[in-house]
Length: 454
Image (tube, rainbow, N blue to C red; front, side, top):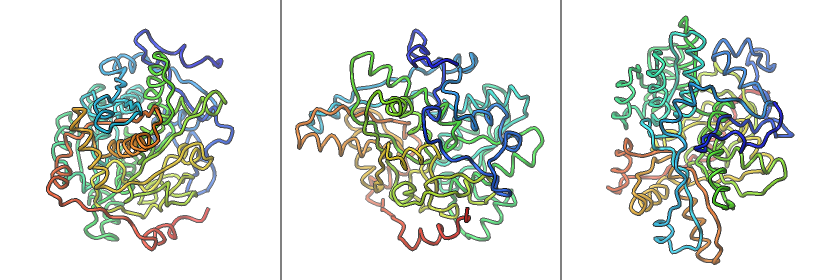
């Protein structure tokens, strides 16, 4: 495909017609994912045994700049896209800041988050391949909810392994998934071999995304007509999520606004990668400069305290190896309330951007995150998800710096979803029962020491 500016790929209503693959513009590409048995780059044939074939192709393609969004997916997107880019006038007034604050709101759909952008794409390719169903993991439940909705739309079976702490904290999110027809199992469970192994090794564990991934992969490969799908981390997911950034940059340019800083919460990297994709593209092509900040929880600080190395993508060590910033696949974070950010590693694409210093990273503590969430909810009228509130925390911090300096900076952050199923967390905060847990160096050394030597 010829190199046409992204603005050509917008419909009349400014919804993208193509996904943008920022890997194509990266001179130094993310390292390839490896077969854990041979330690050689995973082939399309090997990857297609786990993922849908078309998704496997997208995962391995780091040269095609654009992928056309199939019409069936665009028709689904029209229910809620383009999503609104909102100027937070009331928050600006509350902070008494000269900064201009904008947020891209991805919570205006039934799943309540950005996850639906990739869920519908992955369900579409599964249906097109003639599969019976898919298996997956979910942390806070946004991805599981989105995939349940997408599978219902295409009449596919959906099996969700939900991180146990979130399964217990968020029963209503679980029930939404079941309403859409999904089977939801707390992870680690006793239903899979890897789940039983994890429970034996970590008695009473509250689980992690790494645990849930292991169980979902095992469930997929042991059932005929099923494939595994993932809501974050993978390059294919960042590709689908690029609709967020493409709409954001188009809206800003329409009104003559130049973003100075772009902020996104970071767990596995899906919403952050999607939001920043076209901005990174401009930076890589030498067209513009931006300050981009990834915000992660202090309880699971893969970028700010992890190591850049090959590691398993899952706790059960059944998935391929990816080079990423990681705390070690055996690391299980404390039972914090940002379930969607409880992953030991970071997307290979985001990790490479961070290693090249194209983006920076900060970690923030849970209580300060809910301070920011409460401030935002009281003046902007949206109750934000705990994950999204990590970005709000840093956006507020930066706006207050502008108050001190008098700088009129344009700050853009991703409001990835709503927190209406996170009321246990808000109750803990309101009752003064919320605490912060930050892993010690010894905690991290133990899990990092168990990483594969590649």
